[in-house]
Length: 491
Image (tube, rainbow, N blue to C red; front, side):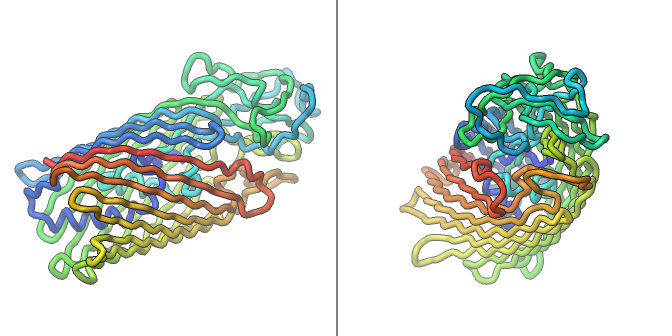
């Protein structure tokens, strides 16, 4: 699921992208053309670390917005991501063994012709994003990237990281695998010459060993980098503020391009703003494990409204729909099917629907503001999700704002999810990101405004999740800590 370009600001703030977008747009169109707020520069740096040394992300970014003499507002943002660590392969947990054992090749596939799987997720993203893997497609990364910080996900290749398999014959359409546990195979960097072991060439079985993880979860080490930029253009024309956005991102095995069009229309003396938009995204994948190159196309549409109820109350409501066609499976994830490891297989099309409601209230006696958001997501994969987000913005004196936040998320499993599969299912995935689970996050951010034109901020958020189906190994649902520092200059 690639084009979902990485949230360079807070990972978990993607849930507020729709509401934030509408608020920012309404502020932009309600401000005189030469207002200071329309010309600014933002710089941020994010450090993300999952528990048990799973995934680490370093992500600096810069956003620049300015206005021409003719009234065009131009916004350019760029981001560089460096990601490394280990990600679950999708294979079921390996039982701990007292001593190394030789993995027996599949009875139907000679060891000399077995294909070594490099089962690294094409989007081994942060745990804070895992629950949004199926939700945040190009609508959030393309349609709104001009108004909110970019979001990205990663792909990576690695050396072969097999797990113990063998048994019945795998389907003819999927390669059978002869595998060992992850601890027996060294990692390699994506796209480097040293990653020849992920080329999909024939390989023989290797001795199994006790996995490095205490939970025996098969993991694959990897590293990758990504860069992306977005170019947005908009202009106030009467009651309308039409705009367009061009997006591009490049990774070692993934390239994505997108274009979006949107219009914010004011009514009722600018107390009502209607937002309409659409986005097209084309993604091209060239897996490093030798699998066939593939593409994915996404079409999204949004209808939203923001209403000023009182001078201190703002209501936002949005409905978004989308369709994804092409290769939607993760090209690196594997499943256990009839005793063998094979690549996962998801449907080649998906429809999705999102409904979002939010209210922003300024509380005058406390000199504070509160934002409450409710979000429902559903798709044709059978995945349904609910999100509740709450943020408090407390002004401290004349120069500080303290912002604690809370988020609760829960989702059902996709129709094709399970830990192991037997028989001849049409679709199958053991990616725990499409399992049933619940996630919670707690954050705290401090903003310092020494002048009206300059601000510094620093924030930290802790994310935890747990499975709800009773069959997925709890060790898969690791927690994460995110630290973000930023600066804002208004011209």
